[in-house]
Length: 78
Image 1 (cartoon, one colour):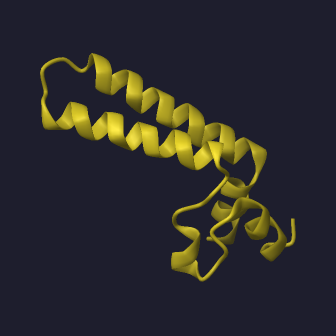
Image 2: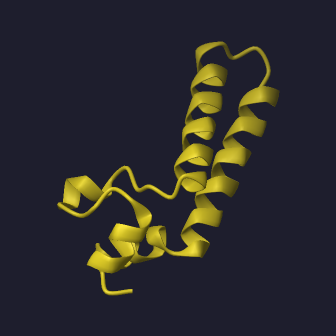
Image 3: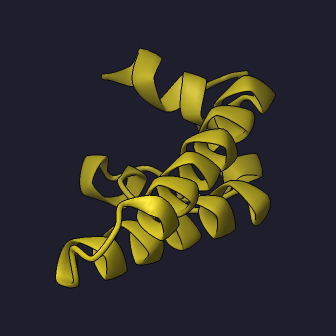
Protein backbone atom coordinates (compact mmCIF):
# COMPACT_ATOMS: atom_id res chain seq x y z
CA UNK A 1 0.00 0.00 0.00
CA UNK A 2 2.91 2.34 0.73
CA UNK A 3 4.12 1.87 -2.86
CA UNK A 4 0.77 3.11 -4.13
CA UNK A 5 1.03 6.26 -2.04
CA UNK A 6 4.66 6.77 -3.06
CA UNK A 7 3.55 6.67 -6.69
CA UNK A 8 0.64 9.05 -6.05
CA UNK A 9 2.99 11.50 -4.32
CA UNK A 10 5.47 11.41 -7.23
CA UNK A 11 5.45 13.61 -10.31
CA UNK A 12 4.45 10.61 -12.42
CA UNK A 13 1.50 10.00 -10.10
CA UNK A 14 0.35 13.58 -10.50
CA UNK A 15 0.65 13.33 -14.27
CA UNK A 16 -1.28 10.03 -14.23
CA UNK A 17 -4.12 11.58 -12.18
CA UNK A 18 -4.34 14.59 -14.48
CA UNK A 19 -4.25 12.40 -17.60
CA UNK A 20 -6.87 10.01 -16.23
CA UNK A 21 -9.06 12.97 -15.25
CA UNK A 22 -8.77 14.50 -18.70
CA UNK A 23 -9.66 11.13 -20.23
CA UNK A 24 -12.76 10.83 -18.02
CA UNK A 25 -13.87 14.34 -18.99
CA UNK A 26 -13.39 13.64 -22.70
CA UNK A 27 -15.22 10.31 -22.50
CA UNK A 28 -17.97 11.92 -20.44
CA UNK A 29 -18.45 14.67 -22.97
CA UNK A 30 -18.65 12.28 -25.91
CA UNK A 31 -20.42 9.29 -24.35
CA UNK A 32 -23.65 10.43 -25.97
CA UNK A 33 -27.03 10.79 -24.32
CA UNK A 34 -26.27 8.68 -21.24
CA UNK A 35 -27.51 11.31 -18.78
CA UNK A 36 -26.29 10.60 -15.25
CA UNK A 37 -23.35 8.50 -16.43
CA UNK A 38 -22.15 11.38 -18.55
CA UNK A 39 -22.40 13.83 -15.65
CA UNK A 40 -20.63 11.45 -13.24
CA UNK A 41 -17.76 10.85 -15.66
CA UNK A 42 -17.23 14.58 -16.14
CA UNK A 43 -17.39 15.28 -12.39
CA UNK A 44 -14.98 12.42 -11.62
CA UNK A 45 -12.64 13.71 -14.33
CA UNK A 46 -12.68 17.24 -12.97
CA UNK A 47 -11.98 15.96 -9.45
CA UNK A 48 -9.01 13.90 -10.70
CA UNK A 49 -7.58 16.85 -12.63
CA UNK A 50 -7.91 19.13 -9.60
CA UNK A 51 -6.43 16.56 -7.23
CA UNK A 52 -3.43 16.15 -9.53
CA UNK A 53 -3.03 19.87 -10.13
CA UNK A 54 -3.18 20.75 -6.44
CA UNK A 55 -0.99 17.78 -5.45
CA UNK A 56 -3.23 16.13 -2.90
CA UNK A 57 -4.09 12.49 -2.30
CA UNK A 58 -7.69 11.91 -1.27
CA UNK A 59 -7.08 8.37 -0.01
CA UNK A 60 -3.96 9.06 2.07
CA UNK A 61 -5.89 10.06 5.23
CA UNK A 62 -7.58 6.63 5.16
CA UNK A 63 -4.11 5.14 5.70
CA UNK A 64 -3.33 7.78 8.36
CA UNK A 65 -0.97 9.60 6.00
CA UNK A 66 -0.85 13.32 5.18
CA UNK A 67 -3.29 14.79 2.65
CA UNK A 68 -0.84 17.14 0.89
CA UNK A 69 1.59 15.71 -1.64
CA UNK A 70 4.73 17.33 -0.22
CA UNK A 71 3.88 16.17 3.31
CA UNK A 72 3.10 12.72 1.97
CA UNK A 73 6.51 12.53 0.30
CA UNK A 74 8.19 13.51 3.56
CA UNK A 75 6.16 10.97 5.56
CA UNK A 76 7.10 8.19 3.13
CA UNK A 77 10.78 9.14 3.11
CA UNK A 78 10.97 10.26 -0.50
